[in-house]
Image (cartoon, rainbow, N blue to C red; front, side, top):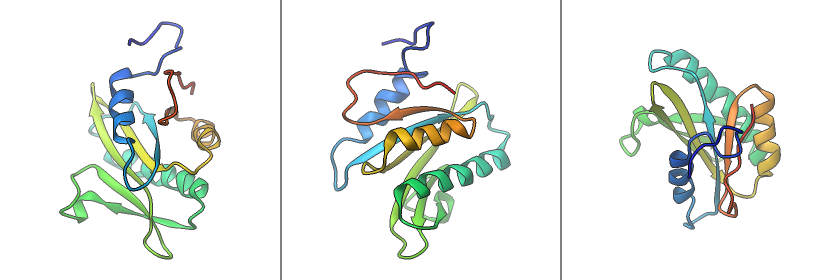
Amino acid sequence: MSDSDDGSDVLDADLYRRTKALLEPGDIDLSGAIVHTDLTGQEDLEMQELTVDLNEIIAAHAGKGESYIHAGNDDPNFSSNQFQGRSLDDDEFVWECQQLLRDGTFDIVFYYEADVDQAALVDDIRDRGYEVTSVVLEDEELTASEA
């Protein structure tokens, strides 16, 4: 699979396939979103702000109340640039993400429980001005996300 000139495929088919593979059935059903950025490895503060903004969007759609961000560098069970959103009320899983530096800019891969309204969540991310690719197990076709 390759990206097409008309934008009908995802921005990064390899990253899409890898993300989708991580959604494979486990203890909970997961969906995902890949947020594509133009942020470089030198823009740590901007990455942090973006992660906070996306936390708010995903937490609102997950319906688990307010959440906080648990950083990988705070926990030996995580790698650097790996984060989790957890609910304030009971420390329940809301989402997990990896900030991946690819070709000089970051893509952020998020995973969360599949019971969210995926289309509405992706639309809300786009409405904030971010370029995003939706990733769900039911998708048989790769479709592009438009910013």
